[in-house]
Length: 305
Image (cartoon, rainbow, N blue to C red):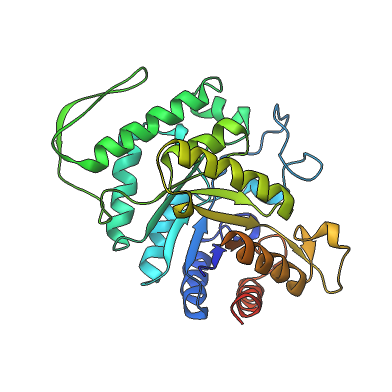
């Protein structure tokens, strides 16, 4: 059962030295996956509400380090754990350039990269990078097409689409993982879940109530079968950014809040039913690197014990 940890990246933990320290420490504890997220800015007058809580963007997001740079830092501090993005706003970059960057990280890490991609939720961030908010789904489909073409490599790499044209080219710098690094996609709507089942290696989700996850899994599996794929091969990565409490909280608050034991019990149930991969993010509960690692150890011991 793979267990994942979000690396220090934002708020008081926006320090690459902490990222390297926690990456090495988490691998020593036994974590199998280390993840980074992606935020660009926090607008003063947002046009999009944050998709959680009361809709207010967490203040910690005002300081946020680049996810791919931090994965390179983590690659140098570790030797076993897989490294992934949960999730990367891939549409902010031309896909041919993104393919080169991801290939480099896969090679630097010795083939340990998981490419987790989402569409994001902030119109303001899209405006800041000059990418249209409209047409995101089509842009993602073509982004995936370009990534796959470049990662395939060879002496006749080419792509012609509505948004990008890659002329017949030679690309010989390839990912270690063949035919490509695993690609996981986020999203909750029917179209997003259909895309996961049709062309991704798994779903990057959040720790929802188990009944909601049953419905999502059903849609994912239906889409995979319709595409002639094995639904059992799809990974389900469930992220929780909990506020850890000293005393137990009402069950309806778990896993958004709760004791380490309550949150671990939720994930144990998700693992049993869905073969889920837990991803714990201690940013909202830790106040120092020592506490970050201490919480990571508590969660790992509770889940692996």
